[in-house]
Amino acid sequence: MMDEMIRSPYGQMPTYVAAPPAAGPWPGVVVIHDFAGMSHDLRNQADWLAGEGFLAAAPDLYYWGSRLRCLWTIIRELAAGAGRTFDDIDSVRGWLTRQDQCTGKIGVIGFCMGGAYAVALAPGHGPLGRQRQLRRLSQERRAGPGRRVPDRRQLRRQRPHADGA
Image (cartoon, rainbow, N blue to C red; front, top):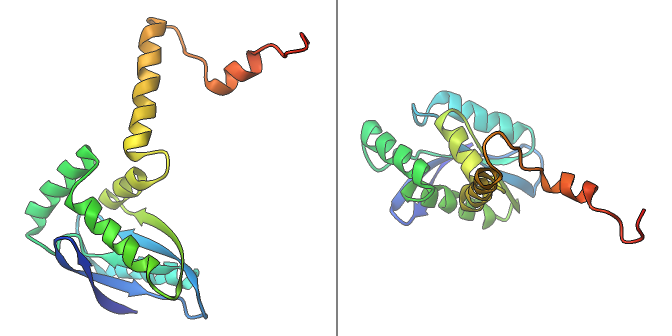
């Protein structure tokens, strides 16, 4: 377990890194803190993930300012789906990918505020996920009030077969 300084587009970001005791390579995981910031609990979570076989990196996303200032910025960026915090998290993912002891498969986990980032960065969420949600809302609006738009899987099941069966 060590503290590492990871370069981001905005400066050097302190990051707690925990590695499994067994020989690697291991999958990586970015551990995003809650609103309280870097804490012993966050380090314990990273250590626990390392014990389970992950190369865990827990960045201090408040490294560039006061907690209140950073928290305000982070919440605005989370709503926008882009910004400094997303870039910082991406820097940690890139750093993990470049480590010889990492398989290159990287996950993101978070707690409280960090959980919102983990969801925003998950496949199917973020900008593409929002497009799907907006498309679905648009379909529902066109269907009219109280009418449910069938799911694509339901439509496929209802589609008649080519042989007429």
